[in-house]
Image 1 (cartoon, one colour):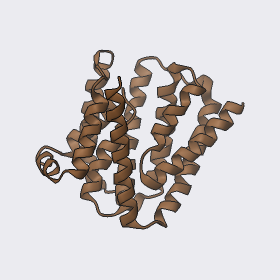
Image 2: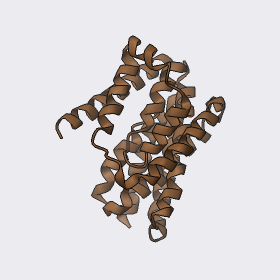
Image 3: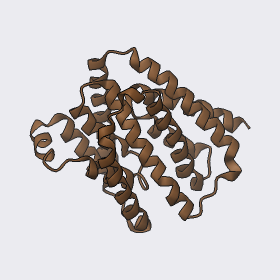
Image 4: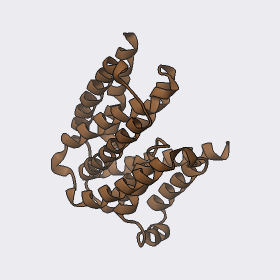
Length: 239
């Protein structure tokens, strides 16, 4: 029973982090789960817990969600999960972190690259990549967050809309898990503790974010995204 309590508490703290800055909690959680769970359970339990974290964060900030972006992202997500799900066992993940890390760094800090990529950057494509790649790698949420940080000026709109996007991405994983025969009925209590911790963490994180300075938090988001991208690039070089 102690594992349920520990992972519920960890889910709470990681969800608080994501509630304040919009990302990072899921990456911390997936780094911890191997210490407690069988490898076959890590991705499914992480996906369901993150679905609870992101959907609750979206609900607590509904007025800030930019719903006009939903249809494009949703169409891209459906295509992405269909294609990546079909080819799941044949997709090489070796260079994906490098590409994501390089894209984030250049898009946030290079005006020339940002201007160039904007010609091709749209929410159909972001939905396709974020949701499709989400089946095989953990750090895809920053893809949409990077674009939203450039296009929206309110920290609450950025994080609420990103939460909506990530909710769709995690929802899309469930049919894939079911199709490959993943069953979590024997881990119901664990999931309940982790879901409760995630929802409570989203509530606390949202309250902290609403009280924070808009411009300073957006800068913090950009810096943390950049540090995450540098870590992805560094880890790929050392492979």
